[in-house]
Image (cartoon, rainbow, N blue to C red; front, side, top):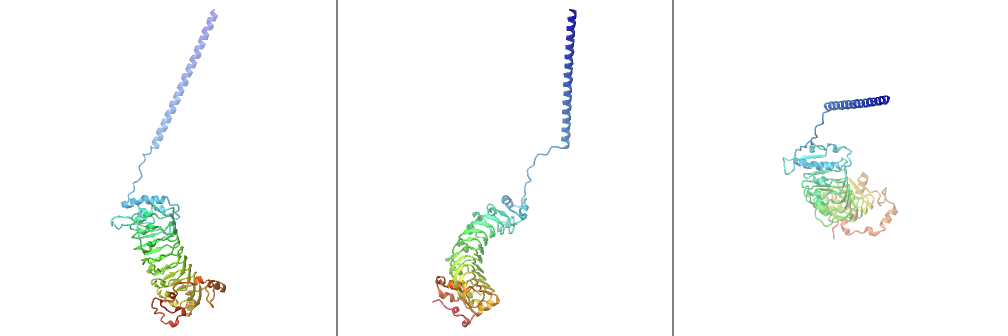
Length: 430
């Protein structure tokens, strides 16, 4: 019995020792974990504090620098220019790199002056992009928003689209040059309402349709260049006198005859350029009234008939070009004695005779009669070509035959009628 009690007592003692040992181990483990955790947190806190001391927090963001403009008018056009810059598709010369900041007047291609209504103000008065090779799908929202613009030159770029009607609101604009680009659509009729416009150049584009007759009679328009487009229409024949000094209609698709009113329409022109169109019919003798003409070029059309002797009245003319038509007959001697004539081309026609004065111009290199039907001269058409041409009498019919020998002026440099060929005799209308 004593032995059993002793064994129970020893068992209780062992159990007590085991529990005490586990409790002690648990306390030590917890203490180690706390110390380790506390040490780790303290080290991280110290490291964060060190990092904060070496890298102070960034200051709060500030608002963008406010642009200051020399004039409110420049502040207005600044976003217009920046918007246009955003649609530029090509800039091989790096022009737009300078379009930064508030100094708009120093942007490449932009020029500032005082507007006419305020001598103390400063505004963008002219834009000159000539030859910059910039590309953009349109000028809308740019050109028409430069309200103080007086001059816009943008030839030889890659601009496209049509011209906004809003350009009519540019009250100071007097020169508009958008030549040699990729514009299309109909003629920009908005220019008809621009009273200040003196110079319009839209050549070398893709405009189509017709040209409004009113354009020839704008009060202040001096120069109109519309060549090398796709305009197709007849030349106006019932209009008054135009004030235009420089006009080019070449390389389009103008059709029909040259009107007898050409002298009124082009009376002030120094250069009459109608080459490379589709003009037909016979030449009116009224071309002899183009007294200011220095250049008369009507080559490469489909004109027929004799050459009017009235050309002898163009005493200022230096260049005459009738090449590449269906003209025929005799070359008037009175034309060959024009004192200022330096270049006279009748090549690729069907003329059959030249007199001694004209032959002198051939020898001196002034007159070109290659590929005609003139016997005895080199470089003429074949007999077969000439016979085939004259076999169609409809080509040879021209009204008012008397007019081709009519000379509506005095010819002090050609006073002797005895020197005239039979068809060159001065005659009066019946």
